[in-house]
Length: 450
Ligand SMILES: [Zn+2]
Ligand SMILES: [Zn+2]
Image (cartoon, rainbow, N blue to C red):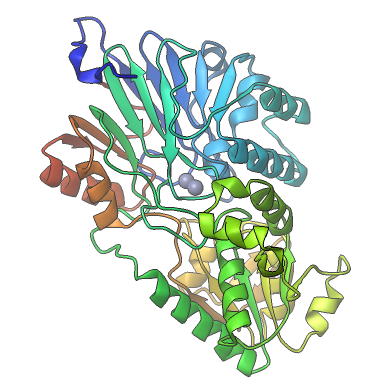
């Protein structure tokens, strides 16, 4: 594709609209509608609070969509997709192969956990899975009127930055990005060309500055060792996908080198299944990991320390003198981690190490803010165990996000999304200053012309 996007001057009446149907001033339910000669939806997720919240998308709009693009498998980007098919959408969803595999796993689990109300059925999930268009990184898809291309986003396996050309404009959608290379993935690509950017701002505040990976590892392993030395158990609530695998590999590496106290590492919830998908999609991981899998005696996916609970009541885990337990969900919304909290939460010997972003309104955030009691299902429990946070993240910090925007050639307009509590505003200001482009923090439901 040699045609430069900036050669095409948009005519009057050819304005494109972007509608912000979710993730505006919040983290969750990412969903953006691009309306020009085609109607393209970028992501369609759910927001987890006490009750789920969905994108502001009606059935009629869903039916009229031409294409849908999914940046990555996390539920705040993918969780509402099957509802499009329930509403009568018949088109495709463009995604990478790992994103398809991981989304299938997450959606099935989400549906299983729905008791009273579900916005869609298994049939709708099946319909979605038969309507996927697999994209490779760095290859243009010319199927619709507007060509699209994915580039590596460094956030989780299969995550993508989207480049979209339509009606003489070129939009870059960051999805969730991590510019740094992690244990498993290379960092996000930078240096795009485009006039419009939609960028996440999870850690967009000026004060959001990530520590170096080595220092984050040290803080985490020190916390783990501190508890193990007291013969306590460490609970690490994590997203099934992304952080879970990175943390597991961090633990494995420090166990092997002898820096970490020897103890079993239990995997509970979907982490184990997700791990299998990671291994099946190893060609999307860093070269170094691929090499270790090939020389199989050093395969980081297979370690004698990894265990899964033998029984439903997890008696074998509780019987261990010391252990590290990796369990979903990451923000303590649900999942087996709640059973661990119930059983281990009252002892000061144990600890809970939070490792990812804790959104407003979640139990994870409440604990970080010092809550000493938690409502778990139908009971209220006291929390005595040590609560700490390890500075791991799969998102870029303020400086890196500004750098990402600055590296884009031809940028005119920036929309800052996927951030809460003024973080988007702080990032918008910094991007405006660094790039000279107009940076806007859209409100929920707003439409902007580009
Ligand atoms: Zn994500
Ligand atoms: Zn997200």
